[in-house]
Image (cartoon, rainbow, N blue to C red; front, side, top):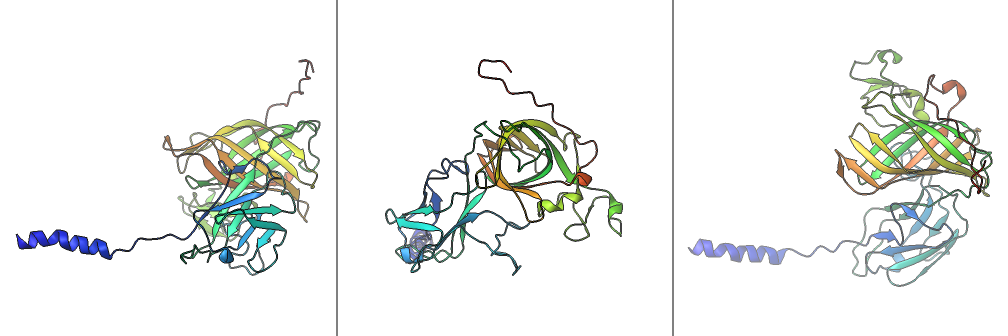
Length: 361
């Protein structure tokens, strides 16, 4: 009996010896809904979970451009890449690319000098070592991915974004990690920016004879970035790996669908692209993204290639038909050379002329 009575005492002593864990501060963007902010001209409000030591808060804001493993330019092993932010806050130094001020002991207001391209995916980086007033220090950098809502004005189209075939690489980041690879044949109206696009699923080319040493029947030959046999489910690293992919329209894995949207040139020399919400189903893992919206900013690079970076939002992400919550992710896209467009790729329907306000044409 004496030993039984001792057990609660030992448990109480053990609990008394356990210290309360005080997590370091983390941050959110005020007004962020499903990865989007409503107004690109409004200041950013970065709110920490608790009061912070302001001298430890180092913050950067810039375009969300990553390598095949999701690393920003200063997070990979390549010394030739870097992360070039539009805004930098370094305590003790003057802000670069804008100004910041503390609204209170938890909220930092950031005003950036240059407006970001419409549709571009953006990131706020809070560097590690940010600390609360008790000295609890974050030991990893925090990234907050965001974009801005976009709707075409319907008054012009795009000369930057031509009618062509594009390849889209979409990374769903929350609530479930998944990747979608798609061809998109886009036909637009140059007068008002409306488009119809035929999106078609892309899968790894399973031809075993593409590699010098043929791959096993359960493998696919990858030629970019290195020649090797890989599992067919291996994710794409960069959108330029598209030559290793082929269209697949055969259900249940393959799919093709038509979606409308708008593309419109912007004053900064980019073209903003957005589609109407549509459902997208992925076979592996078995995920359905309800109400998928893609928004991107397209520009022409130094080699003359039309490229886009942007965001993905979904009303709900279903895993095995079970709702998991709104989806947020990023995308990269590029135009395909005519010689690389797969034959017999499904085409969008003909785009009908826009109706005039009185209902005529």
